[in-house]
Image (cartoon, rainbow, N blue to C red; front, side, top):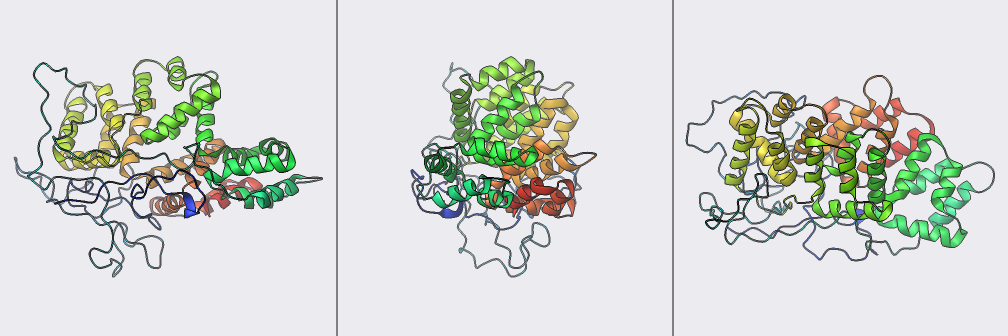
Length: 476
């Protein structure tokens, strides 16, 4: 059975005309989801029948299983069937019950395009990976799995909006530039105008806005913002003006400069990124600071933690269009178990190598297959077998594959829970989420489900003044 060719990447935010060098037709991902709909709880298309998504409570909580394990020699995975994307909600922005389709909302079969994960062999008919020739060097474990003979080529994921310097909005933003200048000219500052203009500015529009501001007023927009505002309000506005790529570069420098390393900030920027985005980040870092990112990581870190981040920086992940083969997933599951629970001591770099090289879809299949086979969540295993920065990084890898919206919802709550608010990290994470409007909607839904409260109301309770207003505006 043949499936449509794989697709990857994201369309321009808002779908506005005027963007240059867009990917050819057919390279965009699945239709964007409205409201929070958690990812499928079965392996990706071609790996098995998806099951209804059930909330996990606390991440890593051991699940309860209603059926005994399958007999020895039988596959634990259901027959392969075509997966349907989540339907848009009808009235509430969140599905009720969680993970289940609202009654009567699924359209007739065939009206949603299938998930685009590439071509997959029919059940029990897929070819095994071609064996290397005798005497050929063996690939290190954790390297991308061998492709079956005749497997379709995978399509690279294009850079996200804002990560390709050639993606610039050729639109007239003179009105916005003049409004910003008027808001900061003379005595006092009109903060409401700054928020209104900048909170929803698209990544491709920011270079045009800054250039137009300079041409019309012979001034730097960033310098004017810095001189007319202050505190975390200024911090948020400047983070927006940098755009997603330069903001990532700024955060990486902040994480690596001075004494000590902010590993959690490295994780926020680097983990779960596409190969194209990772290459763009490394190039921009080199161009900005005249140093390679890898060299700065080596200078700041050491031992196995350094090697883990170098694996991440290699930009060697499987593309999201790569097929998810059951035999490759099973091999990864067995190797992860052998390297962790099945022995005394943990082969840390084996786990790092597997998770840093697999696509999100493959990690999701591995995590679900591991839990099915060994009756323990993979995240729980990582929590038990690792500690410190490596533990946090590996947990983020698993969450990135399982559910990016839930990952980001939890990360935002971590900035606000307990005494005091981690304001800089809260700003950085809200700015990172807000670039993708569809993802921001998903994050708000995931937060509501996980914590039982509205994300915007939670932020209002932790912030105040113009600082509160800019964060809320970005998420509305």
